Image 1 (cartoon, rainbow, N blue to C red):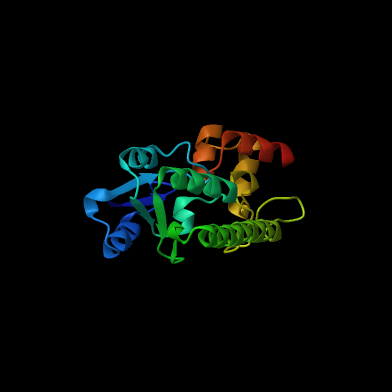
Image 2 (tube, rainbow, N blue to C red):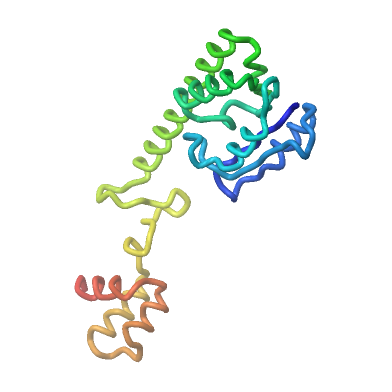
Length: 198
């Protein structure tokens, strides 16, 4: 029997593309198991466990890609060994790998998983560098679009807004703290902080 497994990490992502690929590769729609779960390990994968319960010796589980199976080298190899002991084969469409290839498959899978992990680490490092590049000398994030400090605490007030605060501090304002906060789209603590700075 041929089964398919599709996985995404969050409900904001779509499973449709994976389901279509599985169907196009001969997996019956009723045999496709889907779920929203992390790719780090297999512990939280309820549907994957259900799939394994129905699998028997000689069955094949088709995955669209290795990263849909696992994002962890050690976890992937361990799970493949478990499948092998049960006589269940795994096929990965994107990488054109099947565990019927025995030792060669494990070697190739290890290489692909290693490369994927390195790519993820590189992406994380680039994101970190990007964020650091957008920080000013006080460590606050600056918008790449506007050049202004991001977040309420770092909100840059206009001359007119500062005038309103000065009027409040001088007791000449028609507004209270809450009203000023709503008008300036900031928090009350932000107002108090700015008043103390004036």
